[in-house]
Amino acid sequence: MAALSSFASNLLEESKRFLSKANETTEPGKNAFLHSALMLGFAALEAHVNAIADDFLVSGDLSAHERGLLAVELSDGEFKEKSSLKIQRLEDRVQFLCRRFSRRPIDRTASYWGDFVEAGRLRNRLTHPKADPPTIGENAVRRALNAIIELLNFMYMSIYKKKLPAYNRGLSSKLSF
Image (cartoon, rainbow, N blue to C red; front, side):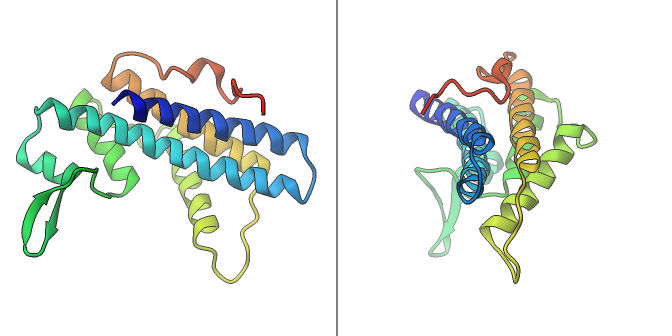
């Protein structure tokens, strides 16, 4: 689905631009840019993962169990295929897609995976704050976005045998707003 892939790429560029804006800004705007960069980074990752899953849903090469994992829900006592992807834990979808379509599982000892797991915790603290508001620093967001880019690049290299298109730009955004 080209539109979803394009949208995912744009979200990643927006995320990287907000990180740049945070670097150029002082409080109170800095936190807003950092929060935006982190949340859009995860939105970009999810959109990319959904686009990859959608590529395989339309190809028809999936077993019933695999289709069930990605697009079937239990509704009113019966299984129904959804027109949109089923909600699963992001980490589970990433691991499934890599293992199933590349035969190359994620190396969960790789530094980008550890940084990705920590980035997920950071996102969760922002999304579901407890008693104290979370403090999110620029370095933490930078590590989070790097982890997302590295993870996406691993997925693209493993599944499509090509680099993530934005990989060589790293954290440099092509946007200039």
